Length: 274
Length: 343
Image (cartoon, rainbow over all chains, first blue to last red; front, side):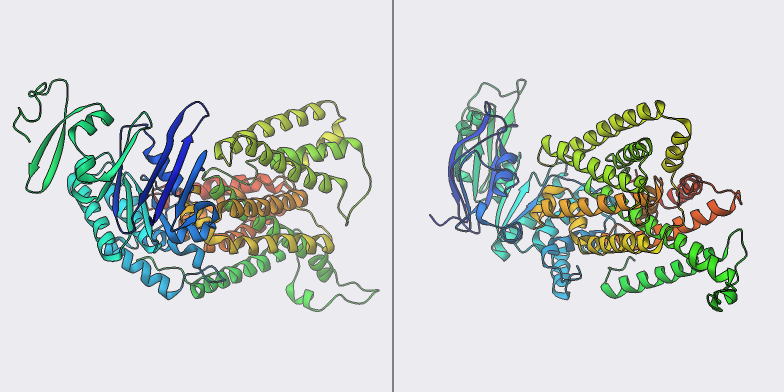
């Protein structure tokens, strides 16, 4: 295997009775954009926290860039893995530039200050995420979409091989959702980053991601090309909901069918979708 | 447009702050019940037979007291900064984890047992206060660790419980002791700056200044910690190490301050907030400027305590609360529109 993230026989539960992830094995190819999707409580964020070592597995191994995750120092791991967590603001009013510069904390000089190169890196990250115009504003004065972009900028400034994101488009409107995914795609294509994003939006995932990891509530999982994993039967099995599948050109779209949906009961074929 | 902090700017600002501090020290050392003229002080100590009274008062009483007030103020302000960021709680102050009640318990035990020795010129009260303060912090830290890896809520609750328990013990001991002993305990609890001898000052100064310098070097890590432990860790910061060192130093300099001057409230809460409101949250700047501001603040407060009801003296803790409260409110109203974490 030559994955940049290799997970082998991974099991984890917050208590000994309730195992969330059971005997999971997969490998992520360098430079791919991977989505992790699944119902609430399936362990998506948990898996993300295991891959960045915020949690320790009960059993099994995780290798990052060919080395066991436990073998890294905090600083060395940060050079491999950057994390964008769900929207959180610091308790004190740091500015956008200060926030992005913090990605360089382990590399500050002996007096605790950043170098000119660090500042250039931070500026590039601000430009890349279209947040340079807020540079001197306090973080808390931004909208959630803007703030999310700042945290992505901070992750970019970390210059890591891998970027993990936990629901990066949560609470964002359509334009900003697409904006964030565009940004991530550019980071993947131009910088060759491996991107792993937890998301509830399988439509965005099928549009942008190369692969998808579907986690089921019963510790089952499916991983593979988005096209092969995201099929109605699979979605029904994992999310326990019927979906409509529509197609525009090469893109496939999935719309959940509620109890009162007008075409409920018909198969996708009968409804004229596939 | 906010400028980015650079080492040059930081040094300039600290230098300016130190000049202001020196001016405050100079002015306050000349104010008091006895008139002291600077000219006379410079005339020197005088001869053995004719002691120069101005010099004597200045060197033996005013100066040590002002230095002591400055040390205690600097220690409490910096410890306040650290506790606020480590506990991620703007309401934290140096006493939040039970240092006050632990020190108080130590004091009342020292008073009751009627010990009569001195250590470096300090009474058993100071030594017991120091031991009580550090012992309590250790206990709270230990209990906090039992509740989880580093659960801020667990730590805070442990602090509240230990605080309540030790306060109860203190009240119990107070109610069974003689009234004159109780008086000296209460006097201590209110916080007092008194003239100490130079050896104690030097030791205290070494501890406090050394501690603040060490904390300064943790500044970038403390900045990252403002975003929470997980975020700091994924940025490559060794969170456990940073927390343990910062916590240990903050507790240590607080214990030194408490053993030198009793419980002086408000400095550790108000000064960090005031400095943060004006200069921003960057700990590389916040720590040194809070130290200098805390020193100046307590020197002024102690000068007021000396002169308001002269020739009697007020406990300085009373002055810090009376002066600090409204001062902080003005700051809060003036700047709160700019800072959003207050809302």
